[in-house]
Image (cartoon, rainbow, N blue to C red):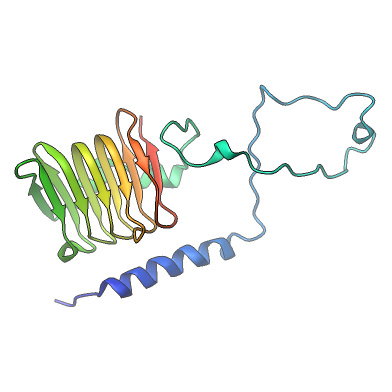
Length: 188
């Protein structure tokens, strides 16, 4: 069996993350809140120039990712976080023993489902998928993993964890962000 190194997987995942913005260059998205929009006042000089560009505002500090975010989940992300679809891909079943489990690097690229009572779960594997029950604390150190859990109290990304997608079906976990391009979202 051919074994891919963690460095090789990380290189591919990071290259994809770096190339995606270049492929999307020129595309733009505008997010507006209809409740807060207003028409320019008659005395506003911009009201007589409909084609004049508006000054861009500095990003609001509240736009940082957080567990309380109520924004719409990107349809592509939601499709990746479909428990039923991922369950069909599961090749390894693990059980939390004494409340803990580790998805090791020997499971890189595989889809794993954990069962039992899991107070702590650590994911070291990269480029695969992990299905979890209720979890106390989830720590992610791998890259490019897709993780779905019923709920969690805390999700912590290690500084070496990059490009992971994590969704939970209920509750509001505390999230400790680190690493690069990690995405978290409620699924309900």
